[in-house]
Image (cartoon, rainbow, N blue to C red; front, top):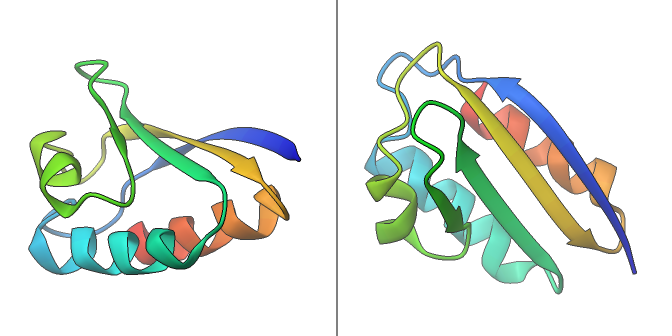
Amino acid sequence: MTSAIVTHNVGQENGVHMRVAGAISEFASKYQGEIIIVNKENNYQANAKSILNLLLLEIKKGQTILIKVKGTNPIQTIDKIKKIVC
């Protein structure tokens, strides 16, 4: 099992709102490893499989997040998350 950590600036106009959190959670739920999202503004972190926890991160457009992945193909997994949050 490998891991990767990448920073990313959120480009979604409304940040990580319900639709975006749902898309992340749906993708993460199918992933066998672990995906953690961290809001660099407040250092809150959440397991990406939980819509509620993602919403509680209060991620807004332009904020920087950390995407941490442990499992198979972590770079491809991070790229998918980055596409969801633009």
